[in-house]
Length: 124
Image 1 (cartoon, rainbow, N blue to C red):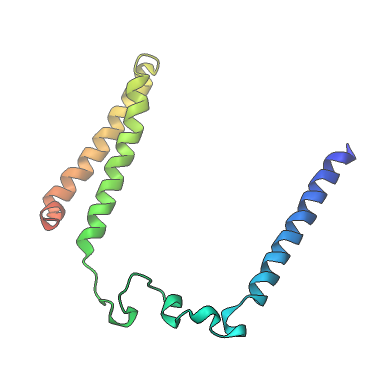
Image 2 (cartoon, helix red, strand yellow; image 1 turned 180 degrees about the horizontal axis):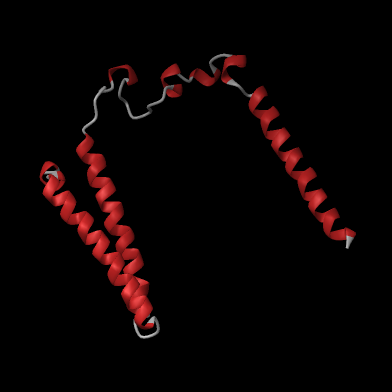
């Protein structure tokens, strides 16, 4: 029985060695310690690497894109729950059928609420 613990101990020692080795390697290869290696510009280490100056980034973001993403996730999750239910409709019996109808009813109420609040109109 002790050999099971020995395998776990060897794995933990190996994990500790690999983690320590990677941290030491990162410390010794740090750019700040050796300066500018191979003429790599400081722009390479900024938060953006897409060609835009990060200091000129827009301050305000349009919230409508996030609303659209959340709505997509909500209805995508609904679809993920509906597909297995539809494939097993013969085996879920009356309890599974009723619980899925309740789930779809609640999501339909949420959709109607968003529609009445005008969230979908602001996305266009």
